[in-house]
Length: 522
Image (cartoon, rainbow, N blue to C red; front, side):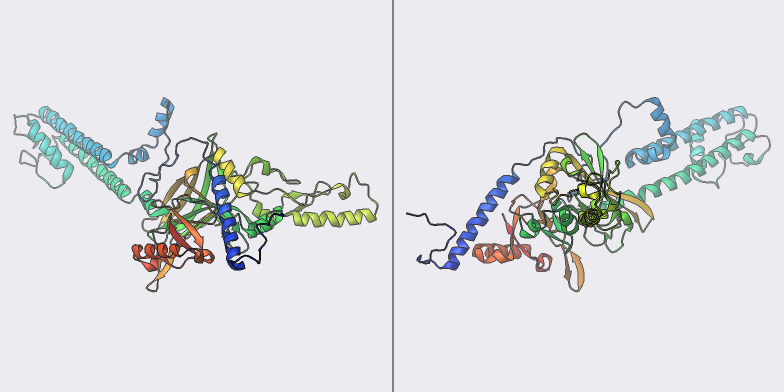
């Protein structure tokens, strides 16, 4: 008996064709999920290095300090720090620095108290006003006089006369002048010190927060949206480097937001770095916001920072670093998107030396020159007739990036720098992402919505990520959830009940908003 093709609908069966199609579709979907889940577990971090930027603040943020220390410091380094003693002193903890200042202040008062005792002993036969004539001033009285001199100007001498203004007591005048001068300079230093401590712009960076997860996904550049790496949209445009660079590509996404959004940060801009397993620091060029224009950010609204993983990116495997006819970078951190958009040309014709931004333009050049040279009977060896431009050029895929990062990436560091508008001081906000902090094939959940005719940011959704594929890894710091598209909502009535329960438990319908995906507790 001939076997029945499982994908051929048998009209003799009792079930309808529609229900059979749905069952077959669910089987294919579940099989794809199992394959994808099994595939995702093959990748795990193989780089075991500590964080350079520790996440030691609430809300999964960092203290904005680099976890690096100096060892084997020589005397030359200590002498170098002495030249910058003020900033070294400012770096001390406030308790230590204030205690040290009080110790110095008290020590100087004691020193001048001793000076007054010695001066009074020198002019014991004169009435200089420090003590009674013929009787030296006691140390307790001298200390009180020194403290009085350090804290005020209008006062009387311990002896009750105006000996300070007499010509026969110059040492007393010099000592009081020296202490008042030191007190004036010390008070000015205290004013500058406490103002710098209280108006420390570095603390302003605490309000610039980053999402807990870093999303690595495939982005459609034409429509500016994230697409699944399993979808037909990506598969249809994945065969040629021209299509990938112009239409879609693997991107690294980070989200940041300034909690103090009512007072925007001035001149905010961003940089990204990657530390590899060999402790080498690499620059990650930023596509959005464009780092050619300063990578300027508007942090008063949740903003995504995007790095395109092309053949120049340090996150791309080395096998993609040498496409054919590509000009050498000479160590410069280039971007392929600049060549595709006409900012520069990186594809060089080896025959005539002309440069082109995309392989599509280069193919047209070679085809036209071949036609002309064949007509003029140019020799094949030294002309364009000898060139063969590959039709299919390998491009970076999400799986390639995931495998490469699991074996080589130690940490990704994001630096947002700006100026505090209140005190006009520059600050930096830092965030660190290890391999375990990456959401593969994920997209940030919309956290901006309208509430009572005002823009509102839901901080509960700020960290949440929806997964476009079938991975079921945690995408929020407190709960795991999977994302199911709306078109599959009718496949499970239980899913609707769970969604309704979640909305009731959240209690804020506006904060939940209207999303294209229904969030379901896993």
